[in-house]
Image (cartoon, rainbow, N blue to C red; front, side, top):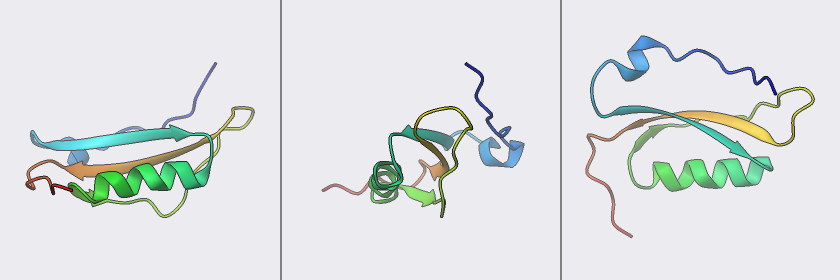
Length: 74
């Protein structure tokens, strides 16, 4: 199985505490729900759309998280 994944840009991980998260999910709603869960806890640069790999099931989404921010507690 070959997946097309965009390379990670050095600026996205230029220091400890910066994270690139690639999400694979069955559908858009699941991918966005997980992204929102991350954004509710840490500073997150969110994606506005998912992508699909031709011939592969599900969707993909990439977001960027800054763990320097104190996590919000539910």
